[in-house]
Image 1 (cartoon, rainbow, N blue to C red):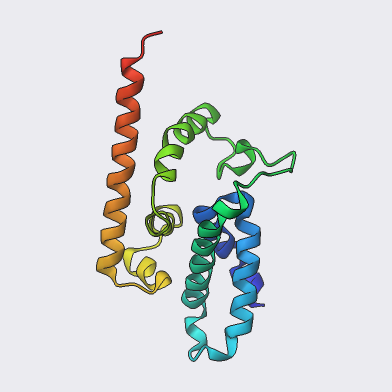
Image 2: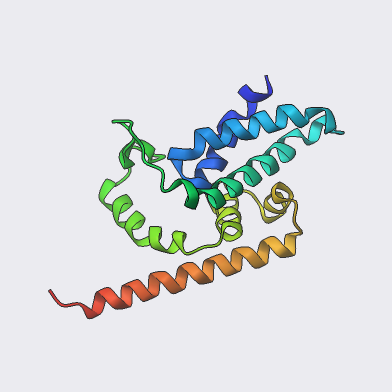
Length: 168
């Protein structure tokens, strides 16, 4: 029952941190860990925040070990960008351009910065909820979010400056 109730949110969290290709594996690992540690949960009402923290930690561990495994590759024929768009009627060209602009910037973030950005902007958590999900103070979450945005701005602006200098 807990898996059914929280699977979508946990998957979205994992996908926001590690990407959609690895999100199912991370989500499964998070639920297995939660099941193993369930006897240690003192307040059943705290399960959602507790499970988010487990999922975020599993995702960060996955990112750390990704370099040893190599980049993820999907073998699903229908696993293309259009299928992953939240609104399939959205302007596909705009989504591709935005992805091409933000991907290098997102890749420049540390695991902690990526996680805070994914929780706050990707999943819409407040800074307090983000901090709670990660087991950190709100001030730390704010600091990581600010640092992530600065890194992304720097990379995007540098890329825009480099592309404007190139003449066809």
